[in-house]
Image (cartoon, rainbow, N blue to C red):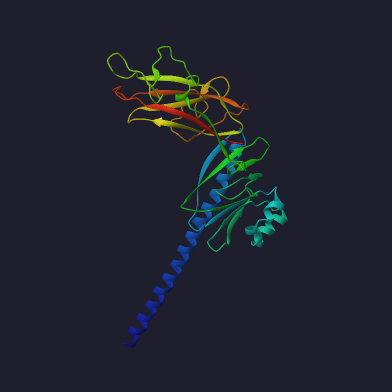
Length: 309
């Protein structure tokens, strides 16, 4: 009987040891996976910074954030005095020591207790505004969910700018339907028109009552006093009909891949800038396309281009 009890106790101890060892191994494995994700985040950001540095452009990139991360901090290592004056930085001696020592670490991952999980050097960058946080050389980003979107902009001064521009967002607006001089029509058959009452731009009808299959128009020039950001439009697009756009920066109308074969297709789409673009004027081409049965027409009220001063 005593031998059975002894064997039973040994069995319990062995199971407990295996469970504990297995839990430790699982915890270690999980931690390793999280570490790999942080390294991937930093490597991808460095690569995206290098990619953006090859052309004068504004680009948006998405990054996967491990669940253990509560905050991401990005600092402008070239603005030491401004960064060190921020209250959150002052209370974190590890970040302060890193800045003062010139280690070059400018990307920090924090947990919910404000402990540093890991940190990296992502290169020579400038830091802008994030949400309602003013420009201070520090981006303190509270993580919500598993993905983080960052705006990278090449200002042409050798540094990549991370975040929103400090001077804020502005719009260049054309209300085409309310001014007959705003849009000039390029198609010879004149397949688009304005409605009588609300002056919206729509497709014309054929003699049989169906709408033209498509129609094209050009805006007058937009004045842009900063970095172009996104294209917006107000209007209505019925099912299976479309409105698409191209932008003329210099010699021809082009889409988001900087060729004449692609188009901007939805309101709020980010604009890709060509490397040589340094003009303050652009024009927009729009194409209205009916549904396959030609029973519906989209209509266009307004085109807006957003930019940062």
